Image 1 (spheres, rainbow, N blue to C red):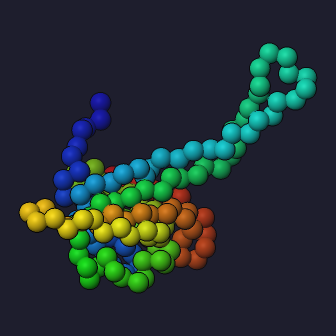
Image 2 (tube, one colour):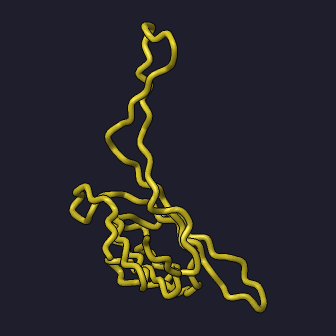
Length: 137
């Protein structure tokens, strides 16, 4: 049986800028899907038939991070770069992608300020070579 772990102490680091955030929540990410291709023909008599495409599409994800205006408003976020999510008790996930959205949270007295970063998984390294997400323990 695999060990259950908490995400406490997890961080995200952006490779080209070296910017690192304390992560409050990770939504989505790590999932993938394949295109379903309908191969039904007029000769089918009982059911539609389908095959799965060969290529995986990795899902985009969002990170809720503690707000740091000097990091969040970094103009280089539109660049494709290696993004590493470190899980202290479980390993790390390396993803090539880019920040495609920045949404600062509400500022409320007594609450910590957060920002949501939307990450688009590009699957292309800095040289444009296909590179899928990789987990290492």
